[in-house]
Image (cartoon, rainbow, N blue to C red):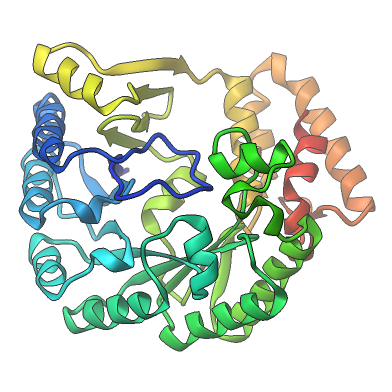
Length: 385
């Protein structure tokens, strides 16, 4: 089975108020040494020429900040190490970073899919979130990408941003559907200690427009409204946060949800080979320094035991609209005597949650009903705790 490759570029122009990722604003003179370090890390896998890679995802951060020549260098290095020509090569881009020259060079480098971080079509919401682009930038970026030949564009929206109302949310969905990208991701805003906005909201403060956040119920309503409107517009809902036109699902991200193998390069990148999960060090200066010293950048190396694999199979399966293949899971994991009681308990919990309308179960696949996806975390906790 072909693997997926993820390349992490943790650099941004500004840090969004809601961001809880390991990214940061750094001097542009750090970009090229970082790219060189990634190429050296990729080169450590020179013996992988028989391993085929069919997807590449360059994420961040804002990897569209890099010079197109640097991105081309990364992709050329990957082609020299891994067999096959990836059918899907995605680049994350912020709207204000897209230019005609960059778009053309991205295409020439072999990038064929762009994930455009729109987040909202309302300037007040974008400003409060710390985003640099505005509504007009989104339209301009989409037009430039189409003109350059991109026929696979994904766009993100966030439900629950500060100053968001039902009217502004419905307008953002309408604007999104005017562009009609091939793929759409809709995320419900997470409020936690990992972001400036989250910390402010949890402490009852007002900075970062924390006092203007919509309620959890309103945010759930926004998501449900989007779900219905995207369905009517011809999008297939295939994962909790993701919709695609027919044939336009994210092939790379499906690898995560199906527990396929993938290799991550760069600071903070994660990898999974089917038996072991590991992550690279998160701080980009330390990552570059270790690479230059010839020292391993891997940390958090964890073997995936059968109990962990079972939980992952259920959790990731239930994030997909098709559900988890419980018949396969029972057959595969019942060979482990220690898991037989747990499988029996899981079946009882599935049947209990089914009786309360929280799960659908046809004897083979178990899934969360679409109308219950806004409380999917609570359902998963009840099922897997």
